[in-house]
Image (cartoon, rainbow, N blue to C red; front, side, top):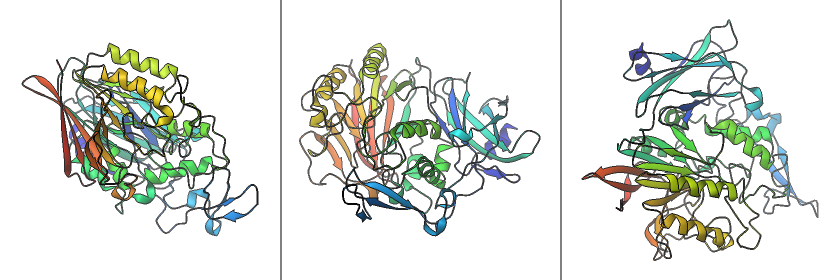
Length: 482
């Protein structure tokens, strides 16, 4: 049985009629003893094809009533048109959800004992998804799994899909670990007929896990209702490159502005620009669409030498437009207190903050949305000083559409920007403007790979930047302090 499961790793088997799994499966929130397997059922085996329409959005000026094709102001009111009378389920890339039940089998690679869950109905109020939490796993082990689908009790299975993941090492084990990071995954900037070349590029470095720092997709232009927001997830995660990667690599997901609601958003922002789709709906949809812990800020240990922190940058922030000062915040008091406490308690050789937005920068002077900007300098100074005072702590950030390594000139805190998911999405910084704090600068798409290893029994962090095709373009080594 184990051999059959292993041989079927990259195969999806259709056994009968619907339900299917056109948006694949995702493995996430992996610890040394547990993992979450995200599933979703669909009415069709494949996504709606490329010849199907997409919505047309126009904007009405609330003062004049004039209608324009582009909304360049947050006070514009969107008007959504569906070509040829199409519904959301008939749009390009759509993979409409379907009632049904799912079950999983899992087995450790070196064990012959197969574990099975009960059949569970997917939740139509959560876009026909279900998330299995599997526990009592062994640290540092490879696992194979199989997800089954059926319409209801007493009916035959309609589909099976297979995948794999590795658990984290125990906190006393100094094994080498590699993880990859990206940001800025704009659908219109994909660079392959099947999705994104970056995913195949990342497979070349054999990551233990993957982190998406946010802007997983971009709601702004077209997600003017809850059904249209869910359609964004359907078309992104029915892309073959995304499906094939996420079923065999454990992932952690962070959200930012574009995959919460709209550009540079905060919870109390008032704007008609997103139509019927609200900030609160965006928060809820994120929990639907990715494997997720109870809170979106959390920390994970990967062996003796690595602990990572994943933080929330939208839910607790002050208004961007407020004057800076001690009460203005991106993280909020509860999250900030948790961060400082858990960092101080950690005995990992390297501690890595993975942030949806920059902490060090530099960033463009016109921006006012992150800790590298003047608008949040007070809290930025506080966090930079705290992390710089810790031994062997660095920052990995997303959001910026270029790759860099920078060192804060005041505190010495080191930051690695991963860059966007495709070259078409790169930009926003002059390619020749390398400042003194830059140790590396490249305005390209691709990803960052971070490896924690040991040389002569001394922990070493090596950060490598790659192109979308997995070609290395930079290496930065950071040796553990005593």
